Image (cartoon, rainbow, N blue to C red; front, side, top):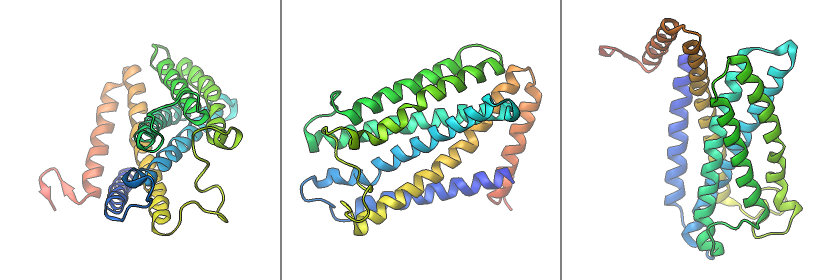
Length: 251
């Protein structure tokens, strides 16, 4: 069942991202001022949303591990997996924002801008979470420090999100915050919303695999190498079966 879900999410992710890519580059330029750079708006907010979803998952998993009644090592695996994925998406957000900002604002990055500065701080904080997670320690010690660091880093998420509302800086206001007065509509809005769906599905797909990696790492740490290998072989066989293939080729 898990292999079938992974296969389904993977196919859906590839198809949705492919459709978004084709629509992004095949439609007319959505803005006569920004020109071709405006196409990045289809993707840039979606990567930010995916990082929010990942860090929200990390925070929830951290709370579940810290609460004695729900403490399970699986929550630590989820927290670690989502922190890795969220950091990747947040780095993509900064890179895409810089590429869009250079022709639009004339700068790659401005530290005095509230949104840019708070996003960079959040990225560094989650790099810190991942660094703490990589330090040698028993699984329960690693889980505790990961959870505490993740809770500390999560404080910056709402600051990043609401920074454009709280401070008047270079960064534009939220695009979708006021549906009654939209700054984007029609086909561009449809592509942007589809991009949100695509990156959400991609996040779920990556979570399935990254959580498995976290679990296998613990099995290797505990010396249960044989179980880890057997589990990986079963996952591979399940993925082949879900895709209609066998080790010998097509059915």
